[in-house]
Image 1: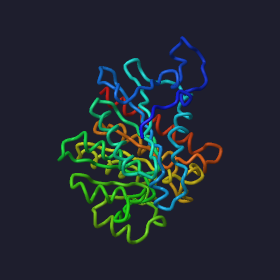
Image 2: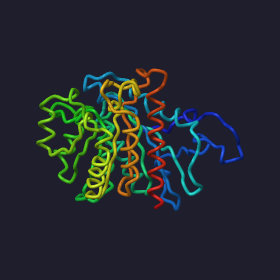
Image 3: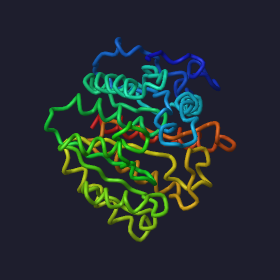
Image 4: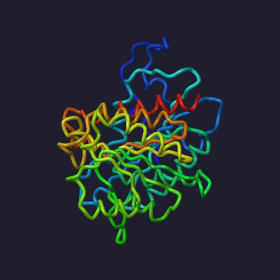
Length: 321
């Protein structure tokens, strides 16, 4: 289930081979097997891919997000290297979901995330369907004391609180976590009124989910939203951020399983991402539902790569503070 990233995923334009101020990510990112990652004096951020959309298939969505991690890497490759000499970005490879074994793949991803956090690496997970989040969570929980309070922040159009009696999917993760872990809370921003049934709103209330509707995420409410986020993060021991790209307006992100005409704009998502990844208690981030097979002119992939780069910058700055 584990494989190193092919070097061809980190290829791109070269402006200079000697002047580091002209370098791009593909010239600096190092591919390191997870067993060779060690803690160091450097500020590390590690990228891991989750090659999976089995959860989307189970949730009756449009598959293709398994191609997201490598597409995001290719889009990241030629972006300019803007980090300091004390900062490093490494790629530890991919977890592959084989033979529909979603639960096994999520467990494997959890092991990778746990190792990275234990080695004091900031962690960025490239999904995959949003079932990626459950594996991400497993790793965070395993790296922390059992009673540490985890605050999950989800930027998403959907609650993903469906029943998992028969099997988990990309629509069940947060219900799994909240029902299984009394030390975890859930705050979701961008909920679509037309993208969730009344039953899901009722379940959200029952599980004490904090949420903000898409229609209320306006410029007039920006200060209050950021204040609410700050208060939420301050009151937890660890903050985990997950971004489902279907929260964006379909004009900006057509390459997702469930595109939304009423989605958020890019600046709103960027503001939330900046706020959360800059918080000192945030050490990991995942991006999900980038589906290159449904993308138009590569817009979703490129936007997703920019969000990843923004997260990497903020996570590394926080690590050095």
